[in-house]
Image (cartoon, rainbow, N blue to C red; front, side, top):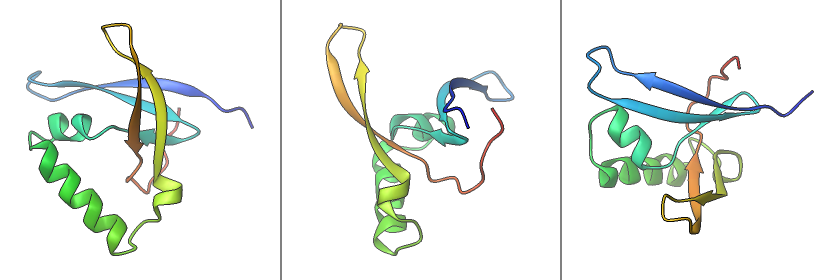
Length: 92
């Protein structure tokens, strides 16, 4: 089984928002800014819900949280935490 990586561009129906989602090995991964933008809610709101999901054991952090090295527009490299909280796999 190959380990594929893809970027999925999601555009809202009104064209108001465009979010790039990272798909790897059949899962969609997002940092906290991406679902906040996608669902038009605050990043602290995403953080609160994510913390509750993990704290209540609904999902295991070992399987849904990963740190990736990301190069920013300033050329610096940063560790960014990505979350895959969607239980349904996507076809890539």
